Length: 357
Image (cartoon, rainbow, N blue to C red; front, top):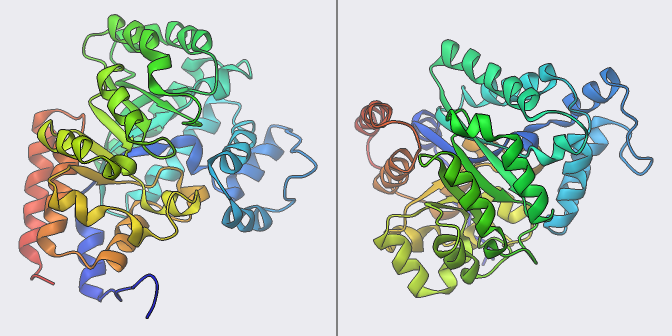
């Protein structure tokens, strides 16, 4: 018997999963830097890559199959960030991602960016933000995809550095252009409670600022509890280790706190051996809302549709399961209520178009 059962996908299932309106809540724009674009930008910007770095984009893509943990990936990820120099670079990066997912049923995306990866290289937050926003505006006009931009703080850097970053972005937080704050990078040994003051500082700039944090990927379920109680987040990024604590599961369900789950990422970074080990069905059974996301798709072997298809391959979900997942993803989005209503109508059209499978 196969250790990890696989359910072949029918063409109907593929068509349904392609058409279903998708919302992405866990997408690092720097993690969409495809090897080909990385080398193009390095050449354009005269960036010398480390001697140990692969010499071709094909070799680089192959090396992504051999990450042994989160830190392995982050080491390469931060080298990739170094080739992003101009506003146009960030525009091209975001445009490439948005154009790709426009063909995969994506309707709304909430994009993370890591300003400290760029301010440490003397780039301004405005330069980075403006490049991403320009691509978002263009794609909205072309395809109607709505976007929000979320600024993530790097938890492996000092609290003082994170606080200074919030100050540098204060005008974008105050005017709502930065819609939310997140916390990413190495989860251990940097628990959420270290950043309590920084989250308060950001929230004081704009009481409507939305709050999220990576928790329960490397760290145990207590990281989730502390992110909720100390940082006052309203969403948890990853959160798959919540399944280890029944009380946390009960709380997520009762308080309707959405997890932004990243299946292919969890395999590549060795959180699980196979997508089938993720608690997808347990979350559904426990009424824990979650969305399915790609995290850093250029590095992890798949964009949002690839993640949807792999979940179906491993769990053989019903059409009703997918309606629940898509509904929770829409309702858990940080777009306005009228946009949610539009997306729920689009979902009903797709649900009614297909028979049960």
